[in-house]
Image (cartoon, rainbow, N blue to C red; front, side, top):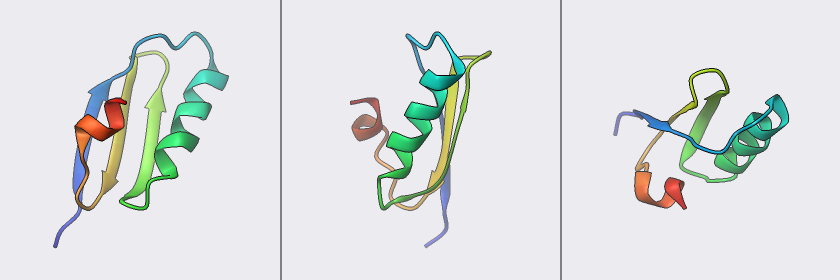
Length: 58
């Protein structure tokens, strides 16, 4: 099965530490191989298999 890339909006970030905390939380999921968060654009991207975007939103 190929890997998927999902991009989503993140609200409530105020600093680089917020972005890094979110990245670390995303990477705790065994399905996510890469996570990136952009503070400037308030977006996040993940790459992995069987990514459940609703689970990420929680």
